[in-house]
Each structure stands twice: as C-alpha cells, then as structure tokens.
Length: 85
Image (tube, rainbow, N blue to C red; front, side, top):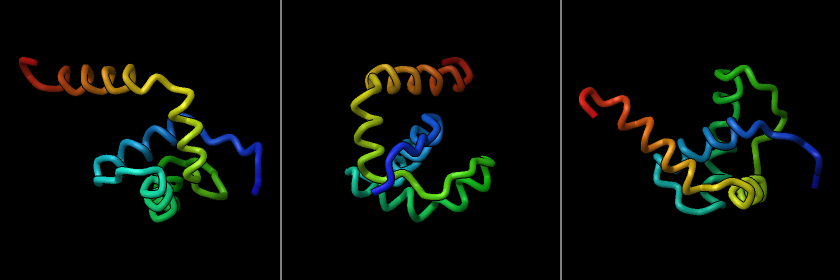
C-alpha cells in the first residue's frame, strides 16, 4: 500500500458529492465510483493523480471534516441559486 499521496480536498469532496448523487451509500461504493470515473474527472479538472482515492482515503477525509457544516454550506449555496430563494 502506498502512503503519503496527497489528494486535493476539493477532488475528494467533488467525487463524494457526485457519488452520493449517483446513490452511492458506502465507502466501498465511493471507491468504485472514484475508480470508474477517475480518468474523466482528472482530465476535466486538469489534476494529475496516478490513482483514484481509495475507500480509506474517503474514510480519513470524512473523519477530518465537519460533514454537517459542508452539508449546510451546500444547502445554503443551492438555495441561493433559486430565484426568490
């Protein structure tokens, strides 16, 4: 297992959000989604990552972030996009 590879937080969050929108419900689902769409996402975003994030990368990510705050920020941003709120 290779350690010390830094994956940009914005990439982890994007993959997680996209996977959740595609009905992924577990870390294993996130891992599969990340592997399946890795080439397209990295090319589109211009990010050079040799490997997609693993399920453990997502686990460590979710342990370190305040998920409730992220959900609130996404909710607030989404509501701000609706004309008239």
